[in-house]
Image 1 (spheres, helix red, strand yellow):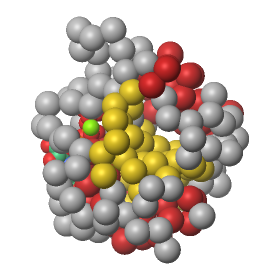
Image 2 (cartoon, helix red, strand yellow):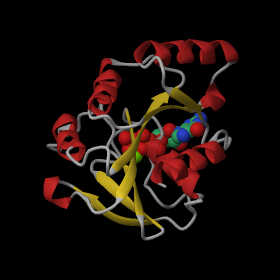
Image 3 (spheres, rainbow, N blue to C red):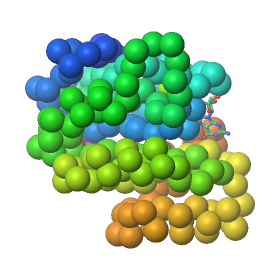
Length: 189
Ligand code: GTP
Ligand code: MG
């Protein structure tokens, strides 16, 4: 199985010419502050790998992480947050999506388990879905919800993507992390 524990930062891609197209990859997407960078650190067992922050908009570029010198994990900038930088999420993702399903082996769409799916989440899901890229819905921060909220979240996700696989995670309580590791490994190999 692909070993994620030695994953290392490679580079940030501020524009199209910086995108890394040479390897298979999986990408973490989601609204700003949903917990993408924290989850990436949890699956790699290294809390200093991707920068995390309680202030939304911390990750402003695509960040590439090397896995075994063979694959990339990609930490995407969060949408739904407009800083004074010129970043346009949709535009950047269109460039990224031109890699297609042969290189982008899976898109992990992270959703905060306490919140409803937004229009922006749906736009993001559709962008990847329309390219034929494998998608997983990943609920984050499940340490904060009860069973009733979990059922509501599940219903919400299935209304958007009826056949999708849903992963339940908490980086804080280390819930669903091992499962996600296996899922990433399966996608890459
Ligand atoms: P951007 O880079 O701004 O798009 O944000 P992000 O999606 O990378 O979020 P990040 O990982 O920086 O985490 C945002 C906040 O959520 C931080 O304060 C984290 O500590 C918190 N957080 C992340 N995962 C969890 C979790 O599993 N449980 C709880 N309770 N908090 C979490
Ligand atoms: Mg981040």
